[in-house]
Image 1 (cartoon, rainbow, N blue to C red):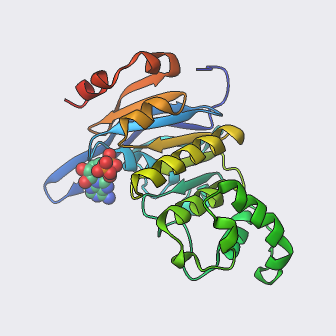
Image 2: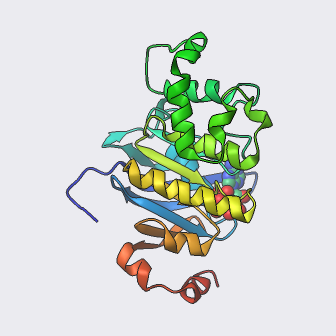
Image 3: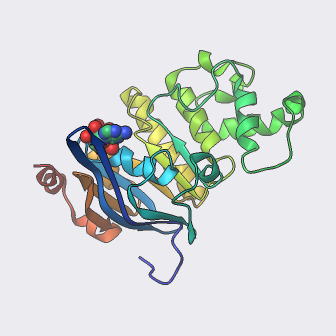
Length: 255
Ligand SMILES: Nc1ncnc2c1ncn2[C@@H]1O[C@H](COP(=O)(O)OP(=O)(O)OP(=O)(O)O)[C@@H](O)[C@H]1O
Protein backbone atom coordinates (compact mmCIF):
# COMPACT_ATOMS: atom_id res chain seq x y z
CA UNK A 1 0.00 0.00 0.00
CA UNK A 2 1.43 3.41 -0.91
CA UNK A 3 2.38 5.61 2.01
CA UNK A 4 3.28 8.85 0.24
CA UNK A 5 0.03 9.47 -1.64
CA UNK A 6 -2.98 11.29 -0.19
CA UNK A 7 -5.69 8.71 0.53
CA UNK A 8 -9.08 9.08 -1.16
CA UNK A 9 -10.63 8.50 2.27
CA UNK A 10 -8.99 8.56 5.65
CA UNK A 11 -10.57 7.84 9.01
CA UNK A 12 -8.60 8.91 12.06
CA UNK A 13 -9.64 7.32 15.35
CA UNK A 14 -13.28 7.26 14.24
CA UNK A 15 -15.46 6.48 17.24
CA UNK A 16 -19.21 6.40 17.73
CA UNK A 17 -20.75 5.92 21.13
CA UNK A 18 -24.49 5.54 21.57
CA UNK A 19 -25.87 6.42 24.98
CA UNK A 20 -29.44 5.56 25.86
CA UNK A 21 -30.35 5.94 29.52
CA UNK A 22 -27.81 3.97 31.53
CA UNK A 23 -26.58 2.09 28.50
CA UNK A 24 -23.41 3.07 26.67
CA UNK A 25 -22.49 1.24 23.49
CA UNK A 26 -19.37 1.76 21.37
CA UNK A 27 -20.52 0.89 17.85
CA UNK A 28 -17.39 2.21 16.08
CA UNK A 29 -14.29 1.77 18.18
CA UNK A 30 -11.27 3.93 17.34
CA UNK A 31 -11.14 2.99 13.66
CA UNK A 32 -8.24 4.38 11.64
CA UNK A 33 -8.20 3.52 7.95
CA UNK A 34 -6.63 4.80 4.73
CA UNK A 35 -8.28 4.01 1.41
CA UNK A 36 -6.20 4.74 -1.67
CA UNK A 37 -7.20 5.36 -5.30
CA UNK A 38 -8.22 2.13 -7.07
CA UNK A 39 -8.43 0.15 -3.83
CA UNK A 40 -11.26 -2.36 -4.11
CA UNK A 41 -11.76 -3.43 -0.51
CA UNK A 42 -14.09 -6.22 0.52
CA UNK A 43 -15.44 -6.13 4.08
CA UNK A 44 -16.43 -9.17 6.12
CA UNK A 45 -17.86 -9.32 9.61
CA UNK A 46 -20.64 -10.98 11.56
CA UNK A 47 -24.02 -9.37 12.24
CA UNK A 48 -23.61 -6.21 14.28
CA UNK A 49 -19.85 -6.03 13.67
CA UNK A 50 -20.11 -2.39 12.56
CA UNK A 51 -19.85 -2.66 8.77
CA UNK A 52 -22.85 -0.46 7.94
CA UNK A 53 -21.84 1.89 10.76
CA UNK A 54 -18.47 2.31 9.02
CA UNK A 55 -20.27 3.16 5.76
CA UNK A 56 -22.57 5.60 7.60
CA UNK A 57 -19.55 7.30 9.17
CA UNK A 58 -17.88 7.68 5.77
CA UNK A 59 -21.00 8.91 3.97
CA UNK A 60 -21.97 11.25 6.83
CA UNK A 61 -25.34 9.76 7.77
CA UNK A 62 -23.79 9.10 11.19
CA UNK A 63 -21.86 11.84 12.92
CA UNK A 64 -18.86 10.68 14.94
CA UNK A 65 -18.57 11.06 18.71
CA UNK A 66 -14.83 11.61 18.22
CA UNK A 67 -12.23 11.21 15.50
CA UNK A 68 -12.28 12.55 11.96
CA UNK A 69 -13.02 11.77 8.31
CA UNK A 70 -11.01 13.13 5.40
CA UNK A 71 -11.84 13.02 1.70
CA UNK A 72 -8.74 13.57 -0.45
CA UNK A 73 -7.04 15.37 2.43
CA UNK A 74 -9.99 17.63 3.27
CA UNK A 75 -11.54 17.33 6.70
CA UNK A 76 -15.25 16.52 6.10
CA UNK A 77 -16.01 15.35 9.64
CA UNK A 78 -18.72 17.98 10.06
CA UNK A 79 -20.01 17.90 6.48
CA UNK A 80 -23.56 16.71 5.81
CA UNK A 81 -24.25 13.56 3.72
CA UNK A 82 -25.51 15.85 0.93
CA UNK A 83 -22.21 17.68 0.82
CA UNK A 84 -20.25 14.42 0.80
CA UNK A 85 -22.50 12.96 -1.92
CA UNK A 86 -20.51 14.81 -4.58
CA UNK A 87 -17.66 12.40 -3.79
CA UNK A 88 -19.42 9.26 -2.58
CA UNK A 89 -21.98 6.93 -4.19
CA UNK A 90 -23.70 4.12 -2.33
CA UNK A 91 -25.63 1.08 -3.53
CA UNK A 92 -27.83 -0.58 -0.91
CA UNK A 93 -29.06 -4.13 -0.41
CA UNK A 94 -32.68 -3.21 -1.07
CA UNK A 95 -33.36 -2.83 -4.82
CA UNK A 96 -36.01 -0.21 -3.95
CA UNK A 97 -33.46 2.15 -2.40
CA UNK A 98 -31.38 3.35 -5.33
CA UNK A 99 -33.98 4.44 -7.86
CA UNK A 100 -37.14 6.55 -8.04
CA UNK A 101 -39.91 3.98 -8.72
CA UNK A 102 -42.37 6.15 -10.67
CA UNK A 103 -39.68 7.58 -12.91
CA UNK A 104 -38.56 5.72 -16.00
CA UNK A 105 -35.17 4.11 -16.42
CA UNK A 106 -34.11 6.96 -18.75
CA UNK A 107 -35.24 9.61 -16.25
CA UNK A 108 -33.35 7.91 -13.43
CA UNK A 109 -30.20 7.73 -15.55
CA UNK A 110 -30.62 11.40 -16.50
CA UNK A 111 -30.74 12.42 -12.84
CA UNK A 112 -27.66 10.35 -12.04
CA UNK A 113 -25.79 11.88 -14.99
CA UNK A 114 -26.33 15.33 -13.44
CA UNK A 115 -24.47 14.50 -10.23
CA UNK A 116 -21.97 17.18 -9.36
CA UNK A 117 -23.00 19.33 -12.35
CA UNK A 118 -24.51 22.76 -11.89
CA UNK A 119 -26.21 22.85 -15.27
CA UNK A 120 -29.67 21.32 -15.43
CA UNK A 121 -30.17 18.66 -18.07
CA UNK A 122 -33.91 19.30 -18.15
CA UNK A 123 -35.96 16.16 -18.00
CA UNK A 124 -37.83 17.31 -21.12
CA UNK A 125 -34.61 16.93 -23.13
CA UNK A 126 -34.18 13.31 -22.24
CA UNK A 127 -35.04 12.18 -25.78
CA UNK A 128 -31.82 13.86 -26.95
CA UNK A 129 -29.83 11.59 -24.67
CA UNK A 130 -31.83 8.40 -25.14
CA UNK A 131 -29.30 6.86 -27.54
CA UNK A 132 -26.49 7.51 -25.05
CA UNK A 133 -28.56 6.06 -22.21
CA UNK A 134 -29.45 3.02 -24.32
CA UNK A 135 -25.80 2.27 -25.04
CA UNK A 136 -24.93 2.68 -21.36
CA UNK A 137 -27.77 0.38 -20.35
CA UNK A 138 -26.66 -2.11 -23.00
CA UNK A 139 -23.22 -2.35 -21.39
CA UNK A 140 -24.99 -3.33 -18.17
CA UNK A 141 -26.75 -6.19 -19.94
CA UNK A 142 -29.88 -7.96 -18.64
CA UNK A 143 -32.15 -6.17 -21.11
CA UNK A 144 -32.19 -2.81 -19.33
CA UNK A 145 -31.76 -0.99 -22.64
CA UNK A 146 -35.19 -2.24 -23.80
CA UNK A 147 -36.80 -0.67 -20.74
CA UNK A 148 -35.74 2.97 -21.04
CA UNK A 149 -39.38 4.10 -20.86
CA UNK A 150 -40.39 1.62 -18.14
CA UNK A 151 -41.01 2.99 -14.62
CA UNK A 152 -38.26 1.45 -12.49
CA UNK A 153 -40.89 0.13 -10.06
CA UNK A 154 -41.83 -2.40 -12.79
CA UNK A 155 -38.29 -3.78 -13.20
CA UNK A 156 -37.04 -7.01 -11.64
CA UNK A 157 -34.87 -6.74 -8.51
CA UNK A 158 -31.79 -7.67 -10.55
CA UNK A 159 -32.52 -5.02 -13.17
CA UNK A 160 -33.07 -2.40 -10.48
CA UNK A 161 -29.77 -3.24 -8.79
CA UNK A 162 -27.98 -3.13 -12.15
CA UNK A 163 -29.59 0.28 -12.75
CA UNK A 164 -28.57 1.45 -9.25
CA UNK A 165 -25.01 0.39 -10.01
CA UNK A 166 -25.06 2.23 -13.35
CA UNK A 167 -26.47 5.35 -11.65
CA UNK A 168 -23.87 5.20 -8.87
CA UNK A 169 -21.00 5.06 -11.36
CA UNK A 170 -22.23 7.03 -14.42
CA UNK A 171 -20.33 10.01 -13.04
CA UNK A 172 -17.41 8.14 -11.46
CA UNK A 173 -17.44 8.88 -7.71
CA UNK A 174 -14.27 9.25 -5.64
CA UNK A 175 -15.58 6.33 -3.59
CA UNK A 176 -18.21 3.69 -4.33
CA UNK A 177 -19.85 2.06 -1.30
CA UNK A 178 -21.48 -1.31 -1.97
CA UNK A 179 -23.62 -2.28 0.99
CA UNK A 180 -24.43 -6.00 0.46
CA UNK A 181 -25.79 -4.94 -2.90
CA UNK A 182 -26.23 -8.50 -4.22
CA UNK A 183 -27.71 -10.00 -1.05
CA UNK A 184 -31.40 -9.64 -1.96
CA UNK A 185 -31.04 -11.28 -5.38
CA UNK A 186 -31.42 -14.91 -6.41
CA UNK A 187 -28.10 -16.81 -6.66
CA UNK A 188 -27.79 -16.61 -10.47
CA UNK A 189 -28.61 -12.89 -10.63
CA UNK A 190 -26.34 -12.24 -7.66
CA UNK A 191 -23.37 -13.86 -9.45
CA UNK A 192 -24.09 -11.85 -12.63
CA UNK A 193 -24.33 -8.56 -10.72
CA UNK A 194 -21.13 -9.30 -8.83
CA UNK A 195 -19.30 -9.92 -12.13
CA UNK A 196 -20.76 -6.70 -13.53
CA UNK A 197 -19.60 -4.86 -10.41
CA UNK A 198 -16.06 -6.16 -10.79
CA UNK A 199 -16.04 -5.22 -14.51
CA UNK A 200 -17.25 -1.67 -13.73
CA UNK A 201 -14.84 -1.11 -10.84
CA UNK A 202 -11.90 -2.40 -12.86
CA UNK A 203 -12.71 -0.72 -16.20
CA UNK A 204 -13.49 2.65 -14.62
CA UNK A 205 -10.56 2.47 -12.17
CA UNK A 206 -12.96 3.06 -9.28
CA UNK A 207 -12.15 3.06 -5.60
CA UNK A 208 -14.67 0.86 -3.83
CA UNK A 209 -15.63 -0.67 -0.50
CA UNK A 210 -17.90 -3.70 -0.60
CA UNK A 211 -19.67 -5.29 2.37
CA UNK A 212 -20.48 -8.93 1.73
CA UNK A 213 -21.48 -12.00 3.68
CA UNK A 214 -20.14 -14.22 0.87
CA UNK A 215 -16.65 -15.24 1.97
CA UNK A 216 -15.95 -16.56 -1.53
CA UNK A 217 -16.69 -13.14 -3.04
CA UNK A 218 -14.63 -11.39 -0.38
CA UNK A 219 -11.68 -13.58 -1.30
CA UNK A 220 -12.21 -13.54 -5.07
CA UNK A 221 -12.73 -9.82 -5.65
CA UNK A 222 -10.74 -6.74 -4.76
CA UNK A 223 -7.14 -6.04 -3.77
CA UNK A 224 -7.67 -5.76 -0.02
CA UNK A 225 -9.87 -7.38 2.59
CA UNK A 226 -11.00 -5.92 5.89
CA UNK A 227 -12.56 -7.94 8.69
CA UNK A 228 -14.64 -6.16 11.34
CA UNK A 229 -15.64 -7.30 14.81
CA UNK A 230 -17.18 -5.36 17.71
CA UNK A 231 -16.85 -2.01 15.90
CA UNK A 232 -13.16 -2.51 15.17
CA UNK A 233 -11.10 -3.47 12.13
CA UNK A 234 -9.46 -6.69 13.27
CA UNK A 235 -7.81 -7.64 9.96
CA UNK A 236 -6.68 -5.54 6.99
CA UNK A 237 -5.18 -7.86 4.40
CA UNK A 238 -3.39 -6.92 1.19
CA UNK A 239 -3.94 -9.00 -1.97
CA UNK A 240 -0.93 -11.26 -1.36
CA UNK A 241 -1.97 -11.99 2.24
CA UNK A 242 -5.53 -12.56 1.09
CA UNK A 243 -4.42 -15.10 -1.50
CA UNK A 244 -2.81 -17.17 1.23
CA UNK A 245 -5.97 -17.24 3.35
CA UNK A 246 -8.24 -20.23 3.05
CA UNK A 247 -11.94 -20.33 3.84
CA UNK A 248 -11.16 -22.24 7.06
CA UNK A 249 -8.95 -19.34 8.20
CA UNK A 250 -11.89 -16.97 7.85
CA UNK A 251 -14.28 -19.22 9.68
CA UNK A 252 -11.74 -19.13 12.54
CA UNK A 253 -11.85 -15.32 12.57
CA UNK A 254 -15.58 -15.46 13.25
CA UNK A 255 -15.22 -17.95 16.10
N1 LIG B 1 -28.14 4.58 15.28
C1 LIG B 1 -27.89 3.55 16.10
N2 LIG B 1 -28.31 3.56 17.38
C2 LIG B 1 -28.06 2.53 18.20
N3 LIG B 1 -27.38 1.43 17.85
C3 LIG B 1 -26.92 1.36 16.60
C4 LIG B 1 -27.17 2.40 15.63
N4 LIG B 1 -26.61 2.03 14.46
C5 LIG B 1 -26.07 0.82 14.67
N5 LIG B 1 -26.25 0.42 15.94
C6 LIG B 1 -25.76 -0.84 16.55
O1 LIG B 1 -24.38 -0.93 16.24
C7 LIG B 1 -24.01 -2.27 15.99
C8 LIG B 1 -23.38 -2.39 14.62
O2 LIG B 1 -24.39 -2.29 13.63
P1 LIG B 1 -24.12 -2.35 12.08
O3 LIG B 1 -25.43 -2.16 11.37
O4 LIG B 1 -23.02 -1.43 11.72
O5 LIG B 1 -23.61 -3.87 11.91
P2 LIG B 1 -23.29 -4.66 10.58
O6 LIG B 1 -21.90 -5.18 10.73
O7 LIG B 1 -23.57 -3.84 9.37
O8 LIG B 1 -24.29 -5.88 10.71
P3 LIG B 1 -25.21 -6.68 9.66
O9 LIG B 1 -24.31 -7.66 9.00
O10 LIG B 1 -26.21 -7.35 10.54
O11 LIG B 1 -25.82 -5.69 8.71
C9 LIG B 1 -25.26 -3.11 16.17
O12 LIG B 1 -25.26 -3.63 17.48
C10 LIG B 1 -26.38 -2.10 15.99
O13 LIG B 1 -27.51 -2.47 16.71
